Image 1: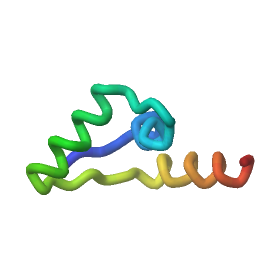
Image 2 (image 1 turned 180 degrees about the vertical axis):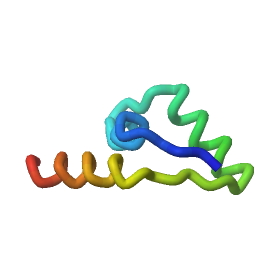
Image 3 (image 1 turned 60 degrees about the horizontal axis):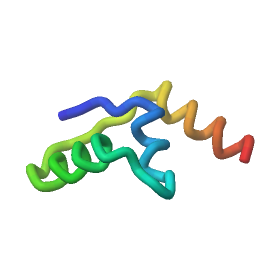
Image 4 (image 1 turned 90 degrees about the vertical axis):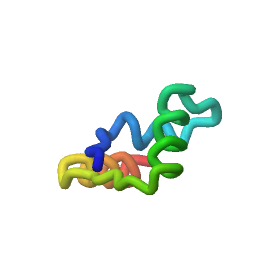
Length: 52
């Protein structure tokens, strides 16, 4: 299980995703592992959506 930070989650929405972030999520998916978000990360994402 992993705890993903806001910058890692937001990276997945870019047109050109960072190769390391992409590889991380591909590996996590292939191994059927979990990626968790903290309540702080969820709040930061919500704030970003509200500002958009």
